Length: 576
Image 1 (spheres, rainbow, N blue to C red):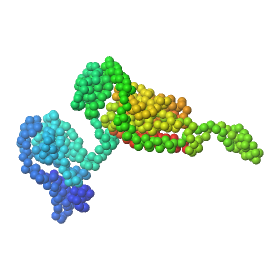
Image 2: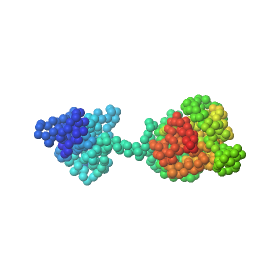
Image 3: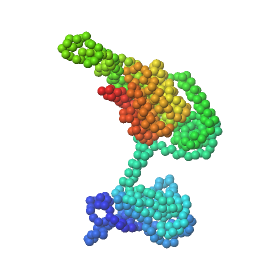
Image 4: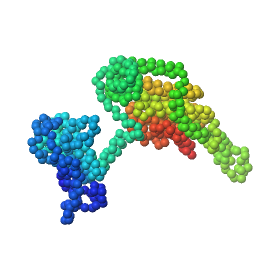
């Protein structure tokens, strides 16, 4: 193979590790990965040939007398192939060749304990920039076409190869399957960026790929399932508790079970269509069993002794954030306006103290009742009103193993409860949950806030239990709307609603525009959303569609005090 065009000067310099400008051609033969002929064909002076030699000449490697598709080809190859499956990608500075498996150093490509797969061929990619050679397996064809006999005569491998643009190749195999391959670094980087924009970027968390497939099996009756003493992973079936992708039992990713149960394994997910097909009588039985288990769990929580170690796990994780939050609270100023006499007015009641000024021609001698902004540093006459709307939906429990979203929500609630302790004169707060069961799930009442660690731990346990046993669904909009309408009726220095959510709105067809309308529905209530969980960049995409400054993404609890500071101080700036 000889290239019809020359390498760009930049690529030529990179390949030869020296700055050079010269006519050139790429040559590839059986004895080398690539050869660069410098000076050819324009210069009269002698040409220089730079070779990247192979350890073993391909012509010396004996062609296999049989192979995966020997019978499918109609017999053995009887002559030397007439086509050289090799192309040069000049812009990518690469030479790509299709080789049969017997001409590939498989022992160097695969570890000792890995058996090489059955392939139609390997793409040998020689990169002249990095001076590296990579081998890409081309999957074996599962069908054949009428052109099998012809292909076996023109190619030594079971594929034909051609260049595709400047940074890739195209192959066609014996079954007629056409595959497009990108090998150029620039093309790969561009495609990776497009993939990240489409799928989402990760921030160090494990990337979870959910494979959905129909099980083809019917549900019977919900049950807890047997306990596996070894906690081995169980996929499918309807026998074990804590399995994934099964049916009837408590687990994750399945259908027809009574409630969720995370045993710490990777989740296999049945399709939503299959879950929707569960008969109504099975749904009802599962719901009743889930409600019974939830009531028993609440009774157990109320009767249990205080678990200091468990509470310390949450409290110690946010101890610094609690101190930061209290510093923020100490710096807050009064915002509420008070009605008082406004003097030096052009209209209103005559101000007795201004009678003499009126005789001299002064016009601003009146006073009237009006609202006046409090002076800087003046104490609050009424406490500020805060409602935290915590997400305790099933998705919080379901995806907690992916990004710790439920634990992060519990840490945030713990931080609020500890941080606002002894600040009743400044803040009156309550915490309400929202899930598929409803939008007004009572967690902390404004007139009965937790006074000690035991009471706070009870709130956290209730959040966890509700997320495990609740029905699927989303009431984020209803919860936000109800909280805003409820808080505006109360007298307070300021009103705040902070929605904690996992940004999983699109699953239930909730448009971001509708959420934005609810957040800004009443100017007297400052409503904000903090997204503490996200699949891919779901939260970032949702944040971009909401009004500026109304939503925040917090994948680390350490960020929440700073976010609350922004929330509380933004109202001071908006009134300036």
